[in-house]
Length: 237
Image (cartoon, rainbow, N blue to C red; front, side, top):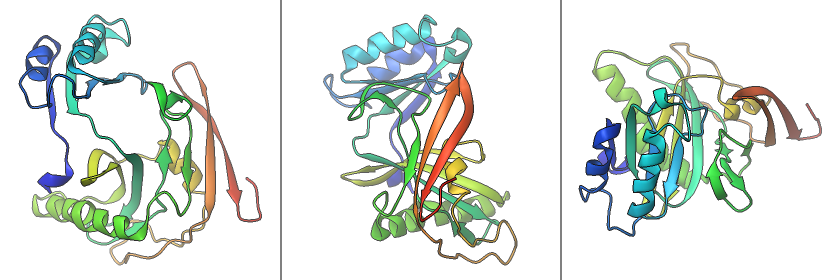
């Protein structure tokens, strides 16, 4: 599975500059992602267009000027990936799994993916989010090895798995794993008819009934307060 993960270093804030300059993250003019390791309400991520901008981002995060200082005791330095983001979501009993429709989150504040990242500006799913060949590759190279590896290491995972990926020119790359239902991408997917069996030992991989759905997420203060979901299949919720 090594080829599906990006280069990443997790270091104390005072060691972040050395990690950035190690050569692991490309040439000086290569884009780099800098993240706060702690809870930052989705706003602790800076996509820096160059190493110099990444150095400035490290300084700003370490100083506590962008997010709470408690969140920046450790920083993540990551390879920047270019492509479309997609989330693959599934139920599993530790062996078998049932896929939900793929979804995409929108994080940047401006039109056409411009401006700083936010905690999320909504999510969408339809057939264009992920084609069958790419989904099959993600299942083969990420989902099934992950479930198999967890079982082989003595902790078969049973529950809900959320895999965040970037679809790059070199293929799908894993950004993150989640095991929670509070992500906005789940909120509207539950309104879709999927016909899935959740977390039972006989839950075989079953196809889902895909329709078009949009989630508009309303935020107050630092966290999500509500979502308004629309289903374009003859009904509105």
